[in-house]
Image (cartoon, rainbow, N blue to C red):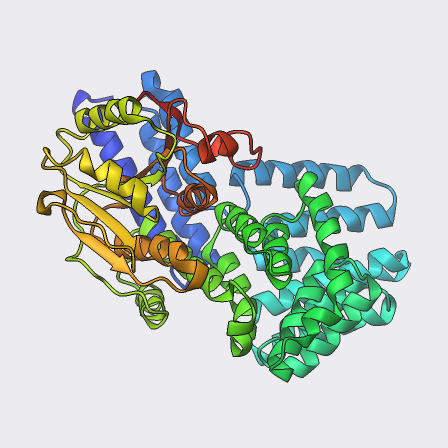
Length: 527
């Protein structure tokens, strides 16, 4: 190879980063999946051609590409998925039982659907119909064939009335074959939701009657009844079944089944039981594990069916704000701040009462979350000295809020520095601060919800900043339940969290939680 054709590693990395940025933008445009695959294949081929020039860096670069590919595929690494498909096709050829062959076809179609490749999913299942294989199938396999084909057709053909109706007919056929197919009834409910809520409610109700522990139709039955009747009485009527659905969803989570939907259902069900702590806990797990914006939006749309009685369902407003912020940070991470969806999210958050209190933030942002109530004078001075040292050359903004007393003690240590510190505090508690400490933003408390108001306020300001997503961090220092909630939110939004060494309270509790402890960027920062 001509020496002039060999790029430097830095040049290759530049091509890699530029290609990935192009992939991010093109992948999420409203184009057909086939077009997305073409874009993906072109960029992937370009990257792989360049890899041959860097034998010494092959392992590291290949790993990097695999990480990017993983992020752009709905439910996993595409190469792994295609390998699974090849293995299933081999099993299909070897299988002699027609029912086994169709089950294998259904599994292949499911993998394609996980990558939003509805056309391939449909083609595989339609072949079984064209060959009249379905006439020889067991009832449950035959019903599943029609059910899943109907589901895929309605997902692909949202803009085609004729094809959409074909999908609905297949779903109806599945019910005719197996009147106890709860999934078919539930899918039909989803297809009619927002088009004809009464009809959607009928289908969801039938699905739920077939399985009283089935959380998906139960949640939709309750929220559709609330929307139709404009009352919260359905919550009380279904109370004992809510407990049953919670138990089943927890069993599924223990087996890593149906994620993130199982988390979202638990968040919703606990909210209906007025358990806001567990509700936020599971909603944040769902947001953390959501592979794409549409999964967040789908849950949000269901929750918004109850906005007619929002004041009577404790926490609903704040859950909706949480979901809107999550969508906003998803877009920010993808550098899609100039899209219609981005503007819609900001406008809706403004309608919820969140406004910019400061000039638009521009530099790196570090959030300190937690409390120092257990710190004696010497321990506090040591912490402040180390923070001053750590942030001595920091040109960005340090943010904290929620605990007025702790913020007052912590801020006092920065009096002799030029650190740009923004404290988000709440009225009516008045605290005197020297001007050098930076800006103080106050929010009036609303009952017990003032901390959530403050947390969401500073995230709203960060969302509207020009700061790049990778320049936003959080540091955890001890704290209480509210502070551990701040840690969950940061991780759910994709913001790295580091923890102060030997911290107690919320930090120690956080580190024993099997659902969260492995998502800390650095378990300890030395004091």
